Image (tube, rainbow over the protein chains, first blue to last red):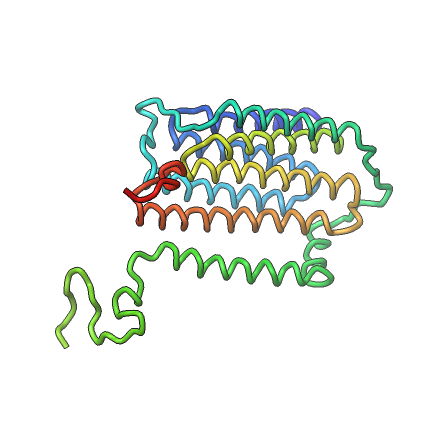
Length: 185
Length: 101
């Protein structure tokens, strides 16, 4: 357990650093995927089987989608030419190192509480009962937020919606398309 | 394997993500940095649940919240990238900050 944790911890951080060091965007995506997988295993180690598997499966799908977007938008997806697209690297590095130092100091200075409570046999059952019971509001808000995301992303990603084609009040009988198509009626 | 070890891992992931989000120019690379930061929240919340309050489900609920936040962040980020790319034909923040020429 101890060894697995430290291998995963070092792997997650190393792959996280690699995301911003490798030349190609596609490699960066898969480095990020490796980082998430290592982090997912550490979640599995604290007996959160369902959430660990959920994180791992979600990350695999997410990174595959991200790789597609990389190829769509980004220059140099294959890393044939070395590239650096950074600004204010020294300042960012200083802020990041400073943040880590402050957080690490806090981690070792704070007297964290320890729990004597027994761990549940079924953490997943505990989570499900919480989400369908006392924490129902959380679940409702998450559902609403996801639904709003669906609408917002479709609106943002639409190139020519119905208001572009039929006018602001949808008053045109035939759509104003760059190329006329369809049957003439 | 203790709470401190897990929090140290979370702090390291958060710092790496912060560096990426601050230093990268490409919008998608900035999203990668933000995802690393949210991932640190997932690791930290899971550790807090296991080591400090395993009898209460709140730590697990925070993990669910972080996972959802990550999904929303990625979907919205890609939609914004698509909209910006369509409108301006740019994919970096510095170019998007300039007035249209």
